[in-house]
Image 1 (tube, rainbow, N blue to C red):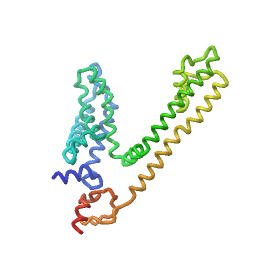
Image 2: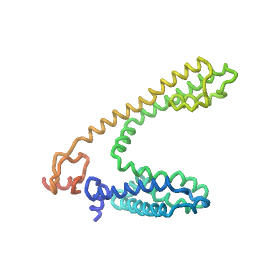
Image 3: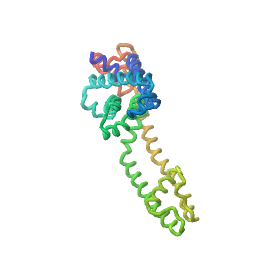
Image 4: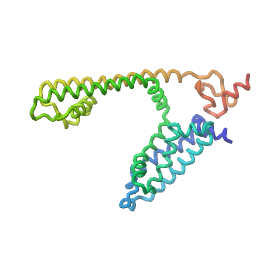
Length: 275
């Protein structure tokens, strides 16, 4: 029974697995929708009376689905402890835990749980295959990206100091401290441009133009790194196993697949039996 449940819960390519994933996926969408429409997501007594009954009903249904999903993953996992402390395990756990926020009376815990309730949206990542590729790309380029971000931070500090010095000649300058300059450099380089700090001198405006142009490169470089890494990962996943499933005859399984994506039969066991 555990093997069959594992096929349903973990193998999204099987008919039963697809149905299971559709149910969980639908529950996630309903839960996020209910959270957005709920007038009192954090348990304020004054607003609680205005809650709509159908929103509470949806939340209870989603809680039941998430609870079953979490405990099923624990049950079918070969290493339950490892699953529990994995990213998806913690997301599944918090998706259940933070339903009980309105019952929390401790102010400190309540503020922690207030922000934690939105974590349930990360359950959607499990259904996006590209999310796994993005995660792999980030891990592969982690050191390069870390060095790059460190360089960007240092550049922001230098540019912030420059704009502070340049604008200090203006008696009506808005840049009273270097911190104001660093904030301006970040806002300008990311092309956000709030407009709360504006250079008044000609040299300051020239520097602002340079910072704006630098912003395009700042965004493009990490994007290129992740794109190249993602393409390599995608190409590696295009490889398929040569053998067919002995139960249904389906071919074209991914090289990392352990079960048939049509009927759920174990590919490794069946291949060994054939040999």
